[in-house]
Image (cartoon, rainbow, N blue to C red; front, side):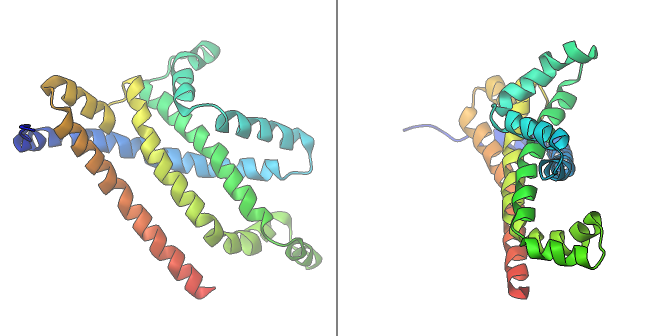
Length: 221
């Protein structure tokens, strides 16, 4: 094999790839925040005694969990504007798709964590006159946080990787820039290897910090 790795091309391409990385982070972080907030509300609706809240939330969760993310992104860009009468930008459509998809998975993480707490703790808190919202805030959520942390970490990693699908909508994130440079210079080995390395550098610190936090929480238990 006589292939010569072109290191100067990597250095030349870095500014473009780093601009794509910035867009990736701008897409990734809001998607996680939207997913966590929406997921918590969905989990509460899923656990509600009222069917008017429980059934729609279940349909929503299963709809987003049981259809491909790529289809969801394309639907929000091409189909959703027909319904609302407003054309979304590629970035907005990708953010909406990733955020809502994340909220469906986060809802199940929250639900599983909340249901893992024994019913006796709910009854005991109610006997003391505490309201439902106060029980959640003061008793339930502090206990389940460390149980949910690994699942939320995995979800954040998945969203970071799924953000590369936004390149299909021409969102100028990291993968889009990598594909563009690869087709421009006809050097996919150098460019795509660099893209993969940048994704690793982006994601690995979060997994390492999460593992450290899990150990610290376990030591305090």
